[in-house]
Image (cartoon, rainbow, N blue to C red; front, side):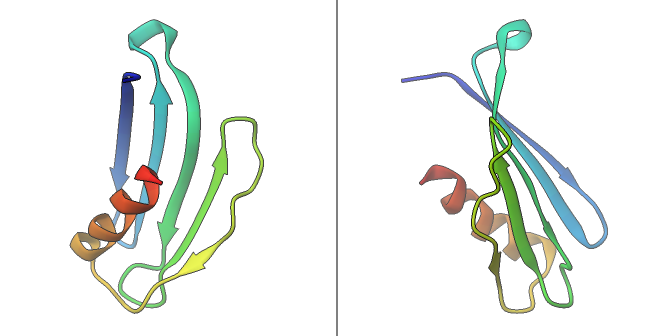
Length: 77
């Protein structure tokens, strides 16, 4: 199993995230993105480690806790 680091940065209406492979000083970014518009019309956007844009997605209106529940399964795929 590869070591991975998940970084979450919650804001009042967004949840930014990044996933890194490796440990400490040797970590390499695999994925960066955000769910913006939490509390209104949330939209998921992300880029992979080389900067390619991943397909966007939208969710029903949600709060930050539901946003995290939706984000984790997306990151595991």
